[in-house]
Length: 274
Image 1: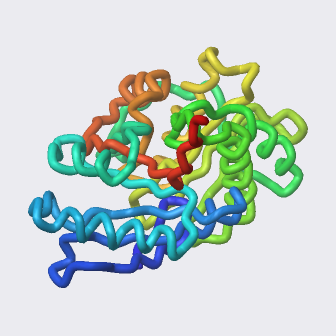
Image 2: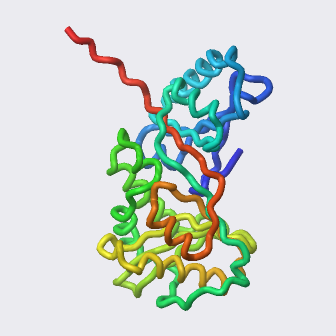
Image 3: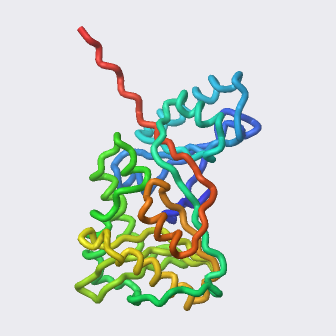
């Protein structure tokens, strides 16, 4: 089993290959519940497979997808892997997004510029404001980047993410907000495991985007985490989101582990032309 960044445990199923080279797949329960149809994730099992194995892998994967009535399946591979870049296209996947790992080591010793704002822990009365921001503020990420996927559902996913974060179901989960009750201007969802913080989701109100408030939010959360004893900060972002990349760069983060993200959609039958 493996845990998704949303906090859900993914139950991967292996198929087809004794040596695990075919990889495995799992249903994503959270996204499936939000969208109203099964969504899955395929994880490759090796850097490449032999050409003689490709037909068997295709049959095994497609059989699993159809057996589980999957409407959309994602797969992320290292950007340097030439074999899977080509073979995923043959399996019916399409390039969707680019993921990057961002890291800041030594937060406890970092010299941060003063923050103009302080953050507070979110409370139940902030729920509507946080949900409204989450449902409008995002334009990046693999679901928004996929031209075949409805933006309305992608927005709903972020709105539900924020609602779940406020409930604080998972150990080490924190939801910070910027602004007083009744005037929430932004929020940041993080998890902390000992001295490592994972920055999961951040947004400012749509009318405030393009101002320095977004940078202030990121800076303020670093101050808050530093004060709580965090030493290392990590996150995963879309490489297509250049404004956020610029913020992370200004704050001293480093970028690594580029991944190409693909989506597979249920094949639709071709319409016959009379």
